Amino acid sequence: MRPAGTRILMIEDDAVIFEATTIGLERLGYHVLGAEDGLEGLELFRRLQQDDPVDVVLLDVMLPTMNGTQICRELRSFSKVPVIMLSARGEGLDMVTGLDAGADDYLAKPFDLQVLDARLRAVLRRTEIPTAATAVPAGPAPISQRLKIDPYKLVVLLDGQGVHLTPTEMKILLMLNETPGAVVSRSDILAEVWGYTWEADHRVIDVHVQRIRRKIGAGRIETVRGFGYRLQDELW
Image (cartoon, rainbow, N blue to C red; front, side, top):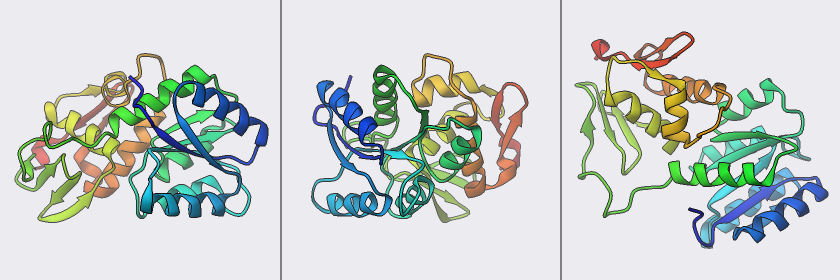
């Protein structure tokens, strides 16, 4: 279900794409704000964050003054807002670079409005912060003697030191921890974390796992080639 009043900031310098996408999304019930310049979009996001923050950012890769990858890295330095990168080139390098900068998802242009709507609803679901009614009991829950996690505050403690994960990274780690030592397939992760019921590029998962490894240690999540990942419980 699409959240009522969802606010989108679309940073896109192609006026035709921006207008067509805005008309389509607003017919579906979204409220779209826009900027056609990288720095302008970043400044608009900062202003909106103070009074009426947006729920998700649609971010073109190629922009004047500041490209989408740079903007995404800057956003991730102070915000966990969901970001979907857009690129007309559709190149694998663009996707990996955008996701590695902190984007939650990636969509190649031209895109179908229904596909964009599905991606928006999926990213909003998986980055939803638990409410007081649905949150787990207060305090970090132990994954191991060394690693503890607080899914409500989105905080991981490794050897007593805080490690901050994005909501998507947190959900991947929690899913792997449900069965430590067991292999979890990429398809299952896409379905559970991203909410995708269609075939998608598995590199989306791979880049997110790489980011988690950089934060909690490279050897703690093992790649099972051609299948998926498992949490190395014996390392704890």
